[in-house]
Length: 250
Image (cartoon, rainbow, N blue to C red):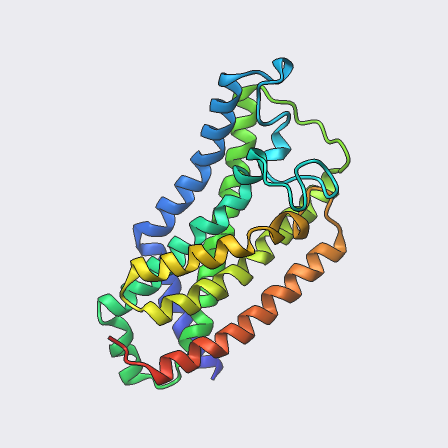
């Protein structure tokens, strides 16, 4: 079993990193915070009360219990790193749909009957792709904040909180990847349908992100998102496996 999974992972990682898709997504993730921070700062400086972002870290997340946390849906909540979870749906759905569109999946399952290996591999590989996008956004936010001249002051949190926040956000990627992959195997080569379903459910889940990944995150947030990602990967992975076994591969 381990040999099969290792072989599948090797193929999937090679396919992902030889396709332009992951590099395009990483590039978009890098450019997005730079454009957001520079453009909002140009429209109105923080000292004039016109800027959306009063400091760089608000482009990453909000402070738990702060004005932009919880159920609040202001512009800083909508235009921060949490947007990437929607973009990750494109990565998962396009990458998976290509398998069915090109005939790769059908040929693969003709030789390998274990569709669970495919689901496990796709979940892990897309998780890595999503994590790369998160790190690219973080780098872009630091660059964008420096270019826009925004302060890097930490109010209500510290460097440890930022580190825990980023870990929690990356672990939470596994939850969304599992959901998006389920819709991807339902829709198969119909990329538009899988993305539409993923965005719809992603919007429903969006409200939990600020609460699970605040800037003042701690060990509990990291453990909760890690456990949630593992549970969703196993649970929805089983659902995806059943779908692949019960439906046509074209």
